[in-house]
Amino acid sequence: MEHCLRVDKRYTSDNLKRMIAEFWDERVTPKKCQKYISHLQQVPPKVLKTEGKAP
Image 1 (tube, rainbow, N blue to C red):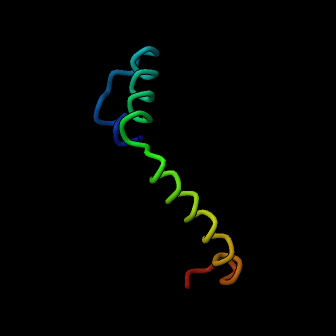
Image 2 (cartoon, rainbow, N blue to C red; image 1 turned 90 degrees about the vertical axis):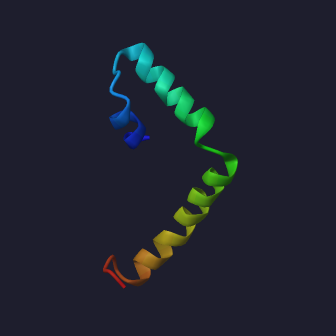
């Protein structure tokens, strides 16, 4: 979303609301959400295992 906001620099309140709504309607799919959620479930155990250090 940050990239989209950098490219389209119209930052009035109405335009910002429109851009955010367009982003969620066009780019965030249920499949993408599931991918992110699944990844988040995998990360904490790995971070704890390595005590926060790079593997």
